[in-house]
Length: 222
Image 1 (cartoon, rainbow, N blue to C red):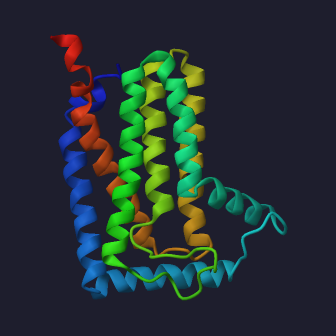
Image 2 (image 1 turned 180 degrees about the horizontal axis):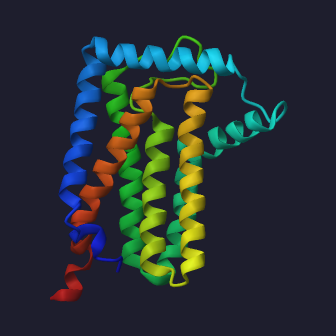
């Protein structure tokens, strides 16, 4: 089983409530085109455009563009789902039920993000790349990467015993996560509100699944 602190901590409810508030405010703001959300999104898009121009995805050019392209590729929802399947196989060595829990959490969380995106149907920034098709809010890359990053952190804290290995894995997971969030803004694929919305929804979803985690072991207690 995973470390109980993830679903019994005193910070569980406050983090959940804050995430719900953030996601609700962003969603209402996007749907009703509030001036605050529009100003923040427009200002951040203009800032990224002024600083980086309109970069193209490709493994040529500057080293930074190569890194951002790698992050955009590995952060595709389909890529993250494949990584999650592979990760669940590793987790199953320790616990098959935990592997199933993590797999269901990530797949359903990503699917929920997709459904909400279709309902809200927000257009992407005017200067997004052709390969970034579909609607904009909430960001699928941001949502999926947050889901799997949370799973990696939970599993690392719960099952990796060596401190050096534990912090190395967590640090790499966070770098992977930050890189994916950054590339969505760098390539003008999303507004900053889209990215935050995807992250907030992922946190909400994972916390709901953490609350349900003991149910996956209920037979063992009977």
